[in-house]
Amino acid sequence: MPRGFEADINEADAAQRWRDFSTYMSRWGDRFIQHVESLLGEELQSKIVRLGRQVNEIGIDPFGFDPQSARYLLALAALMHRRYFRTEVQGISGLPQGRVMLVANHSGQVPIDGMLLGASLILDAEPPRLPRSMVEKWSAQLPFVSMLFARSGQVVGSPENARRLLENDETLLVFPEGARGIAKPFERRYQLEPFGNGFMRLALATHTPIVPVAIIGGEEQYPSIANLGGLAKLLRMPSFPIIPQLFFGMWMPLPTRYRIHFGEAITFQGDPDDEDAVIEEKVWVVRSTIQGMLHRGLQERRSIFF
Image 1 (cartoon, rainbow, N blue to C red):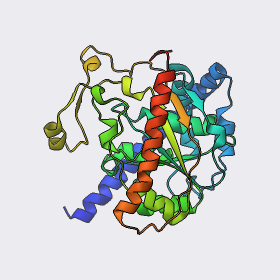
Image 2: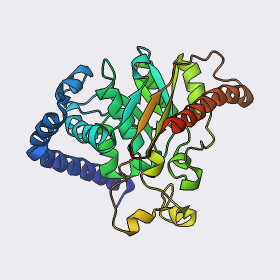
Image 3: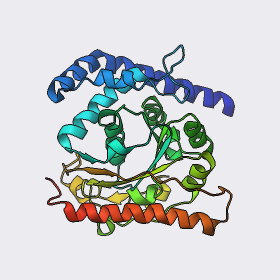
Image 4: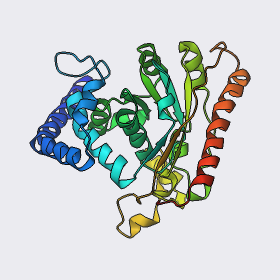
């Protein structure tokens, strides 16, 4: 079978799976949303409307965001944000208007921290903001997952995509630790992995303010005691953590209390094409700011679960 023809089949199969999933969701989705709104006392639909997205004739924006599908995803995220993890949000009122880059620490084996950070931007920011996360490129190879990410507004991480989003005055979420951060073992909890320089070059090129964000609570949701790098490479996964709670049938993350701290916006000046040493000095400012916010947040925390 020709490669191009096979790719067309895979793409058509992925689209059909998404349509089947959307049909299934629509059967119970509205009822679920009504239940969540009643439970939380919040109107989720109005939050989606206030995002003010411009969509095409099939109901999606240029990056694939689908407001109708997002209603269901937001209901689930709101339930986790408000009730399961009981997230505390600080400093979100200080977000600057217009384009902004949120740079945060990453942890937890699965990207629940990104989901809760995104939920806070829609539910707690005024006005609500559509979060745009840069997801790992390997996720684009997963037909259902890639479609889910796109419909919820997330974009495959690339300099071109990120620049287009910022030039469109979007709110961009960046986790410079990448897979290394999310897969940290428990013994290295809240110790930041090295940051890449790409986000800083992008911020300089687009004149975008950076808001450092410290997320506390993710490191304890799925404590990992080891990472089987060889097996992960064999399976083409970014990591293969060993999580003891899974061996006891505890598939849900532990109900840790999340705390999300938004810092003050920092605007950097300089040439985006400067040598690495010059860019690294600016990156160090962001990384050390987030590490300091984590230390302060951990000192103020009375309990992992309360």
